[in-house]
Length: 267
Image 1 (cartoon, one colour):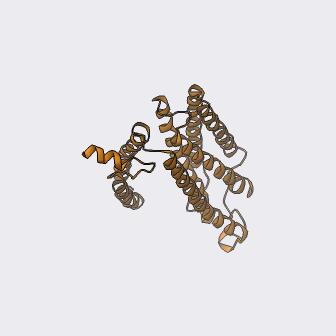
Image 2 (cartoon, one colour):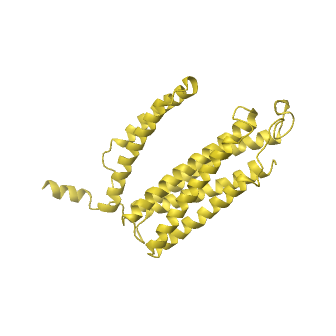
Image 3 (cartoon, rainbow, N blue to C red):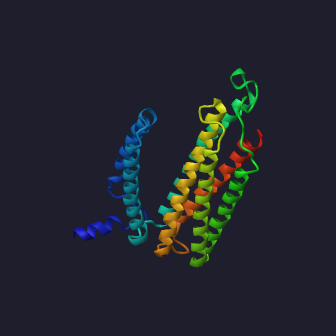
């Protein structure tokens, strides 16, 4: 009788999320990460950051495991649920656009209304910019190419060509890692720091947050690649990969604006 009531409660197209400890655990971990970063800035102590990052990785692994089980093995993600998740992902990307828009707004305000603190010029005096036709241009080509490969992987999956889909996903993750490596190399070769006027602060904030988004997107696509190797996607049931590809295209577009407005235009 108990099992009958269980199935009656779930015999509909909607899905009530099961009780999970992972949201509150992740919230506490992120809250603790704030204090760890403070210790890193003031005491140069990296140990608590490493502990928190490792704990966060464990929590995310358990949380994603539960979501994958509900969607792939228990069949709880029906068409209505997937439509709702698509709307949620769309709103999330819009919120991310607003996040970067605030940085672009600040950048344009500082560039178009230079004052004595910037030497009445933009970029400010004594700031040696990066040549936009060196590493930034190469990174642009790499990221645009990764957008092509993730689209190839998506279309191959829709056409039930899982071999080409695996190849496209592997190339996308590989190109994303190359982009992150070149970005790190560029930071090490920089002639200015985040403390050098408003330009240095905005440059490292904008490119740094974009770099974090690239790493997150690469992680999402890596998880999707592992799921694809385990035959957890089909031609009509692959929202996890679809949302990751949306996120990756968003990262591509943000980089194009960064390259044109931060690297090329002031140069």
